[in-house]
Length: 174
Image (cartoon, rainbow, N blue to C red; front, side):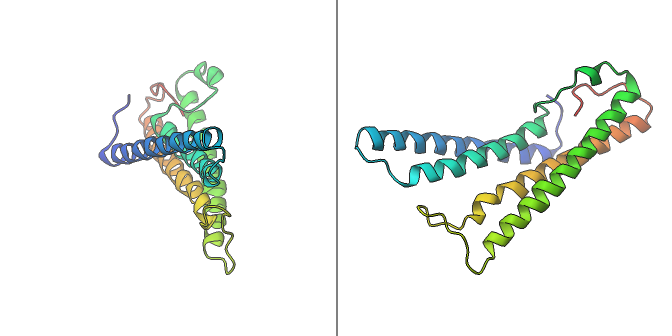
């Protein structure tokens, strides 16, 4: 595992803890839903709606954890065949694409969606939980911001590596 700075390590620990808590809550929610349906004969109405929200949150925050740890999915077969500086340049380009996508789609798009739903004159309320649906979408800009900031830090490291003339180093890539 690569060495993390204190801020990145703290963020990672908080995110991992949140993912664990959300996943445990999701498991308990689904177990209660099954129990109430098959044992009590009438499924609790809120279990399905809560499970949908928790599943999205655990997926998005889990993706952020994976991105910080560099264990996300990446097809790097051909990139690994490129020697030295060329690989570093490709990694920088890929990180640029990730930053653009994360900022445009997740932070701007997800953030504007969440903000518009939270500040709407007639907010869309989830029917069973009676919560503003905007809270459901707040995980998009949060996860996007984490991915963008991590990508910027990784890009700065790659540029430093490239400028130092040691572009061949950098196992793990993007």
